[in-house]
Image 1 (tube, rainbow, N blue to C red):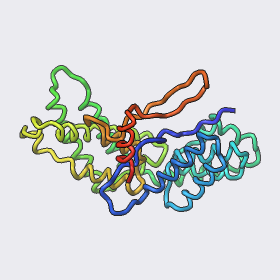
Image 2: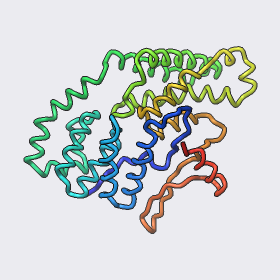
Image 3: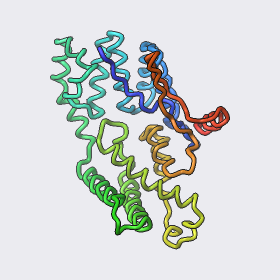
Length: 294
């Protein structure tokens, strides 16, 4: 049986944020511990961490609930696995998502699976109630314009592109200020990726301006300010509306040097082992780890 864990944010940064309260930072530390336990095949320890975290915080991320469910399946804790499966539905999972490994295991318990599918519409409706379709359409339209702005054209200069991106960043800032930061990154939602891409583009312009004195002396760029949007991203991270890997991807785009290091994967074919590591010298690893601490 194959077991699919979503460990995508393992080893990414827990960046310093301008906040007096740690908010969800400890949540990220704890779920990272769970992920490390999974890598060691200690599913019981990982599940214990996940259960504790879910009880301690008002909301969770779909990746963590997914991983907790897989741990419960691995440990043959069927009752708990179904409880996590219900939580997954509240995070946007649909019934067809359970047709894939490792969730086929749940279907083998026909009585509990029937009970789960009977309750599914109720939990799905609860999730749908959290989705503001009109607001979602506005963000979607903004993402389409963002795609057009970065689309390569011979008749469009970088300066023109940056101007378009800045105007879109202002619109995005106003949307967030009026409606709050969206909860898409907590859920299995395609808008999560679209929002991340937009925020990344706008931080890319911000970072290029900050590192380039020539741009800073240009009237157009001098008139641009991304402070409000950046503060919203930091606040979203602190409040647990964004995972550390998303925060890192967004805020480090077009930086001359990533302060957290570049994470990659080492594949040992002989040992059939995959391990994450940083492409840094020992001295740079020490510096990157300091930057990762909160």
